[in-house]
Structure formats: C-alpha cells, structure tokens
Image 1 (cartoon, rainbow, N blue to C red):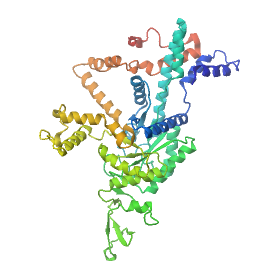
Image 2 (image 1 turned 45 degrees about the vertical axis):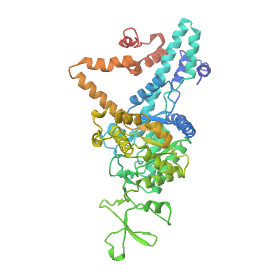
Image 3 (image 1 turned 90 degrees about the horizontal axis):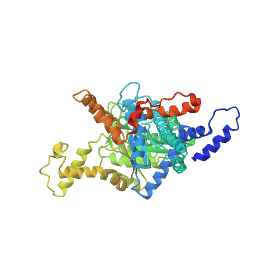
Image 4 (image 1 turned 180 degrees about the vertical axis):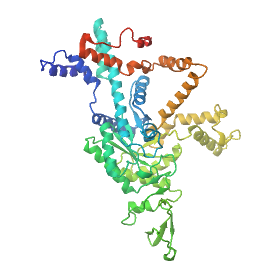
Length: 530
C-alpha cells in the first residue's frame, strides 16, 4: 500500500465533508496503513495465497521448505515474528502453528487438560483471533515508529531521509504470516467440523489441520489409545472444511490431513463395503480377524465376509476392533492417498520418532500415486531428540563395524557423552534434520508443536531459582533485563510494546495540543534509549 496513494484517498474523503474539522488527512492515512487487514477473512485470503506460493516454490526446489513454532498466546506469537524480522529481515517461509495440545493445556477455562479434545472448541478460533490481534498491533507499533521518524526528518528539513522512510513504508513487510491451526478431529460430526472451521477461518486461519481419529476418543498423537475412523468418515470432514473455505470466499484455503494410523491400533467401527476392493473393504482388510465356522459362533459376534471366508474381527470389551500388528505404515499410505484424492492439500504423518528413512519410505509410496504429495511434519518435543539421534548414530556405526564399545546404547542421554564423537555427529544430524528431510522425505513444512510451552517453563524456572535465591534482584537484572537490552529485545521497553506510544499518537490526533501524553521526559522508558 502506497503512503502517497493512501494519503490522497484520505484527502478526497475528508475534504468532501466540511464539518469534519480537526481531522488530519495524514493521520487518517497513517491509521489506514497501520490497519491494513480489516477482518480475519482479509488475513485468511492473504496468507492462503502466501502458502500456495510457498508450496509451488517447494515443488520446484526442496530447499525452500517452510517452518513454524507453536504459540499459545498472542504475545508469544507476536514476539516470535518480531524476532524473525529483526534477525533475518524477512518473514518469508516462516509461519505460526496453533497447537490443540497447548490450547487444551493452557487456554481452557477448565484449567490444564490433556490433549483429548475436552477443551472448549471456541477457544481455538479465539486464539487464532488473538494471535492476529497481536500481529496487527506489531504492524501498527512498528509503522508508528517510522511515522515518528518521518516527522523528525521533516522538522530537520532532511528530505532525502524522509523519502527513504516513505519508501520503507511503501515496501513494508507485515508481521501477518500464515497460521496452521489444529482443529483436532473436528470436535464432533462433519456438521460440527464445518461450523468450527468457519469460525477459525473467520478469525484468520488459512490452513486447517484435521486428524483421522474418532472425535470423542481423541488422544494426543504421542500417547497410546488412539482410535481411527473409516476413510469415508474422514473424507466427509475434509469436505466440511472445504465447504467452509468456499462459503467464506477463501477459495485457496489449505487443508492438512493428518493420519495417526502409525500409532493407532484400534478402530471404533467396521467400514461399510459395497464390493470387494472398495475403500471400505481396504480399510477392513487391516483388521485382526480369525476365520470361523458356524459352530464356533458366540453370542453377539460380529462377522465379515472376505472372499469365500467368514471372519470374526477381534473385538475388545470397549467395543473397539483391533488392527493387525505391523500394518501401521500401510494404513498411513492408504490414508494419505485417499485424503489427497478427496480434497486435502498437505499431509501430516504422526510418527513415534524423528527418523528420515522411516518417513521417506512412506512418502515414496504415496508419491507413486500422487507425485507432488507434500508433508507437514511435527518436530515434536515428545521425541527425545538427543537420545534418538545418538542411538541412530550408534546403530549406524555398529552396522559399519566402527568402534562402539565405549558407548552404552541405553545411557546415551548422559552428559558424559556430550563432547564425544558420537554425540557431535548426532548433533549435526539434528541440525540438518529439517533440510535433509525436506530434500529426501517430501517435508514442505517443519513445525515444533509445543516449543514455547517449554521455553516458558525453562525461563521461569531459571528466574525463580536466581531471584528467590542468593542473587536476589541481580537474578532478574543480569539474566533478563541486561540480556534484553544487549540483544535488542524490543519488549525491554514494555510500555512501548504494549501500545503506549500508539496511544499517544492517537491522543494527539484526537485532541491536538490539549492531549495529555505519556511519553514525556518523565517516562522511565527513556532510560532504555541507549
């Protein structure tokens, strides 16, 4: 949006209304530029286009993968994007992730809950809206600081610097980035999924991640007891999400289909099958069954026919049915192909460990049917990354007849190994994991679901230990404030970050010279200029 064009528009509107005395055309132009995105749908349309462009770029060059971190509060998301802009000068290919786990654990009115879809489903779109509220405020704050510099340049008569600042406004990169939002298993039937999807899209979500678990049995992807649904049930929810996007005019919205089949050994129902080889029959073919004869029938038995055989699926007292051991990867591949053939755009395969070859083996099979299939991958804190990769290196060395006698595979997490050759090789594999997986396992987007949950816990633990211990106030000053100042962390000036300067600008717009502003000489934030 051009500064001068926006100013011209404001002039034409304001000068057509003679009674609007005291309204500054330039103030109106600035406020419009500071609030480029009026609604969540504006955000969803803008960010969906970004994701589509990034997906196309990745198809051409796998080094152009994307990344995100999970954020459980608007301030956390805001600070993450501010930090990205500060360190890298651009937000390109960096997103936000909204984790259902963190909504359950941190944002429910019931208090901390496990990741089982027990939290209020309205808290999910509420967090999407909150994240974008904070990102919009980051735009308004940063642009406001540029506008103040423009005013200073004008006061000095420095036209060249003023022009450079105006150019920076015209080429300003917003803090608004795509959010991939977790809708769990849809919080009910397909209609419930559709209604919640609309709320999430209206709040700004351009990408919805939905999983193939039973909604009322939903478990965290890294816990036991997961139960999947037949493909037709899951496809109905994918369609529900697509209808929500299309109804709201976000025609290029993104649906991420997640399969938990690798770790899910149960299903709640036997799929309907009209003929041999259809999708229901394929789903049922993975059931753990035993062949029966009429005389072997028991009260309440459920039977299915497969060819000339009559089979009894193994059923638990919970009325759930088991899948055969070792079929998880095959079920994942079928889940993914079916989802992509029925409207999903991206895949998510929840694994039990971060192992590139395991992921690639499934993606290669999917791509035999859908050549441009792409994954979003959970670089989960549920994985013990240090132990996993040290054990991977240990196993590789063992197969190569390298010396491993000095290592105990079961104790590789020990700090005693931290400077060892094995640990250093493992750390290098962790460092390059995202790049390598993007190149060889079709992973378009890497995310960490719960990082800011853990960073908040770690930083709070460190502060509490020092502040309430021998360091006292120095525990805060040396370990927090001093580091913020020297690292250029914007929120060290917390009044500015919370909108004090923005409020002062508005007071002057509204009241002119009569405005009582907070940013005068007595404001203690002036201590942080240097």
